[in-house]
Image (tube, rainbow, N blue to C red; front, side, top):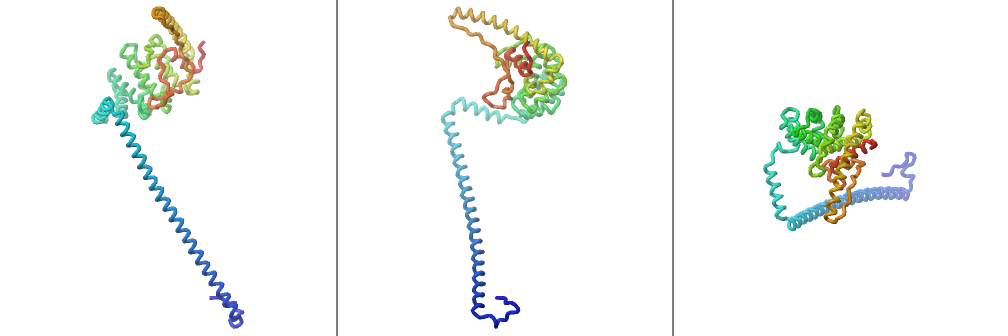
Length: 338
């Protein structure tokens, strides 16, 4: 209804003007209704469009997943059909039987806990050696087991055990497995510090190097190297950090000890090389083939020595040659040869 000013009486307004105002107000109200209806209609179209897109994407994802699973199943089936040899079947059956016979105590985490308990509790050499063998497997294959080792007192106990051993054959086995366990733990960057921060750890390793410098051991990688080369690898890994390397160099006897070990190892290597050269020359004269002497490779970094669970092509295995091993220690610590 049109509101007229109080001073204006209805009789004073012409009928044509009044009708015009009423018509304009109706048009405005009609336009307002149309605009509101158009807005709601467009909003409904947007919602419907978004919902349809959602349904289409969901359907497409389901179809893609189905296609991928069909393709994976087909690839697996075709590979098994073409490669399922007798050897593969025997391996698969062996794994199935192993899984059936698996027990809780054989899991790596449980083996680690039991081995640590044996190591801390028992004094008999056979129990200790069995515990070390379990720990070697666990720390080589599982980073969690390395962390469990670092959180327990097992690393400290291993260093005490190494210091209490003599040069008898059983004790050498204990030392070899002990160093291998420490080496496995130190390869994992999160637990390297746990090995280094044990009291007198570096002095213990230097004592081992001096004690076993004359026993180079086998240079064949399958045999795992000697106590000397394993200790060199462990010392080099502990020296990767620049701060730790500086601390090791500041140990009064460290530099002179390592330089002396290098001279002795280099002299022994030279003598072995001369004997080998004479044998090879003799064989060359007999067989008529040429011989080129092998020059030891100098290793300047240990950054490529990674845990066994890190599957990379550029991973470097532990050094089994004594001269290369002591050179790796010197290069990592920044010690001159002379």
